[in-house]
Image (cartoon, rainbow, N blue to C red; front, side, top):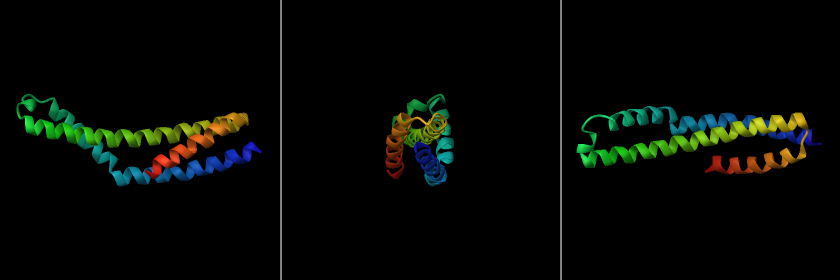
Length: 114
């Protein structure tokens, strides 16, 4: 019986993959990573801290970008972990892993909706 539920969750997770890709594209994560790298390099330049107003703006923007990137990377990582958990549970036909999978899936789904 658990194998059928594992198959259902495996399909749900498969369907969520493209949704996470769309979310990354909508958030323009690649551009955010490039901008964050550029700003990090700027903070390391000589004289960066001499202009306090500019340095504060750069630091604030960098923090925003890093938060956005980190949040998306955590979602993708949680999704990958659930895919692995689903495969492990399916191989072992383990009801305990299934309960964990159900709980973690609901949590991930809510975080993606946010």
